[in-house]
Image (cartoon, rainbow, N blue to C red):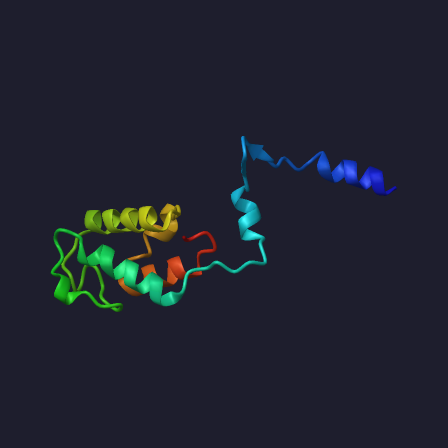
Length: 120
């Protein structure tokens, strides 16, 4: 019985074991890990603010964790898309279009990234 169960489970799991001497771990295993390597909120805040401050059309002195991209910084929708893309690149994650459309301030960007399980 145990061997049949083992075969059934192993028949559905495909995990690469190694690449030469380097052990490979699929990303979905990381998300199930008991090791908590999630980013601290202060790290997320600092990195988001740095991204926004470095945006060419932004006056860095106006950037705070609560700043709205369009109302406070005068950015347009294309600038908003570019900021979200920069955030995706910085934190190595992909933000679905429906979620990206909602991110229009530093506060929303911070919350999204902080709550994303794969942000690094």
